[in-house]
Length: 64
Picture: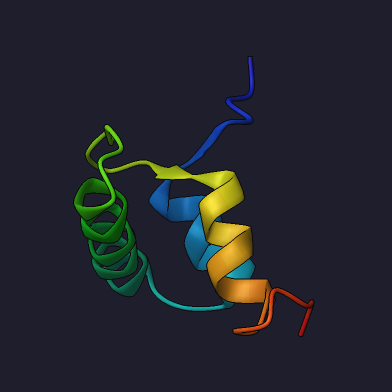
């Protein structure tokens, strides 16, 4: 069963066209942001909705 709520490093890497090592760093950074906002995070996984918001929207909340 495909996990649709969270992304793994392989999926982040493929989506952005980067290495898995860089994807891990990005996941860690974004999870730290979520943790600072009071959310629980799963190490090595990234909330898909937060990823899409951070990568594909600008500061005004509009799609890039």
